[in-house]
Length: 149
Image (cartoon, rainbow, N blue to C red; front, side, top):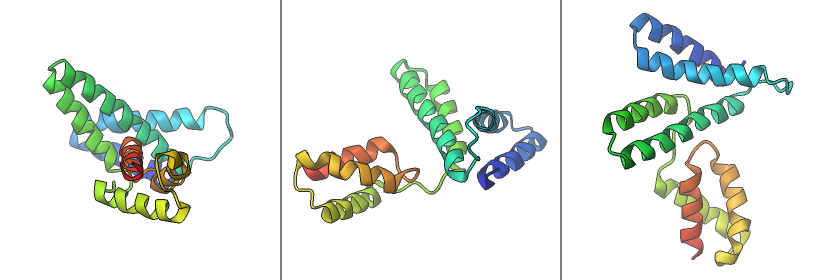
């Protein structure tokens, strides 16, 4: 079991003792994803990288929910989703800022010799690989497009 998964289990116990229901529910959702991964029969061992994928999936679901709630004026539910997303981010590596992402993408553009929008595919693959788990994929994609145009 990955160290992130062990950390999640420890935090579940703390949330139970503190009677923090929202935190407990959010952590249990991570744990459910971990259990699903372990029982899917693929035979793959749970690594920190796999655990991060599970958590990032939860973050993405919450971002989508936030957009939907805000579009329909349901600010209380949107705030709840934001709070849950903050809990999920505790178990991910520090997210890079837009300027830090831009710096990484500029370096990749220089390394690949990309010159224009036609070279998008040359840059996006290495950028996503290097920034995986460290930055939102949408932000990476937007940054690559911006710098290549």
